[in-house]
Image 1 (tube, rainbow, N blue to C red):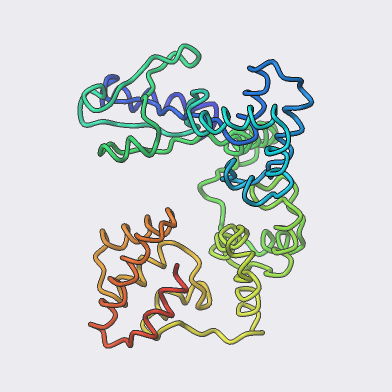
Image 2: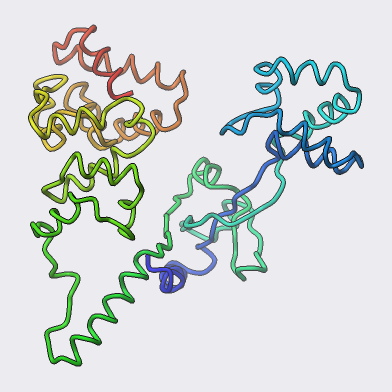
Length: 339
């Protein structure tokens, strides 16, 4: 939603479903490995440089823990063994790592409960936003059965809105017909020529150097390929080389093939490449007989990347494929692709 009008959307929902049934969602910052070392050193009155030296021994990576850092860094392990002050800090840091450090507000998450929200979870009043917030985070509110809606405020929409108003003021003064976003064509050749040239400064999600290079190579000619660009320019597809295959298939440098002939209608739009979660869900339905609900469970399991859940889903998928006379080896191969 437009940044200027997001609050109006929340107000509307509150009036429609009742203020006692609508709440924003809390987020909890935790004591991560590097931060907890600095905090402990400061709390113990140790020199700043000592805390800084220890924290710099911990790699700055997502999901990094003290245990991982010690196991992967022999120098760090030796420092702990050799220096008493370092050992003291690390021992206490281990006890505090991972606990909640501060509370914040989810950027877009809103819960709409079927009744008064405090019948389902604890809430509290946030003095900064002057609004009610759950004391459960986004994952926990879903575990207890509540539905989380994302009402994200997007500055780009606000910029577009203001730009259109400015343009229309100019057109009004010239007695010309005003610009209407709803009537703009999504297949204007000039727009795609501009995109293919890489001149995308200030175009939302299309302006980074890497994205510009991908746009120049892909040369999108329809709206659906702009959607594909956004899906391709992510760590997973980039690391796997999926973007290269997509570009080559579009321009006829590689043959368009499908993992199974039954998937041709599902993957024709993306040149045989499994690009979207919706395609994974459709593949599970077409090949393995999943219901829409079961396919959504598969999608969620993929997102969580939990080994046990994915192994369960693999077995369900392979068994379902067997009912369509798809051999186990082929079913395993397709599951590896969608995983």
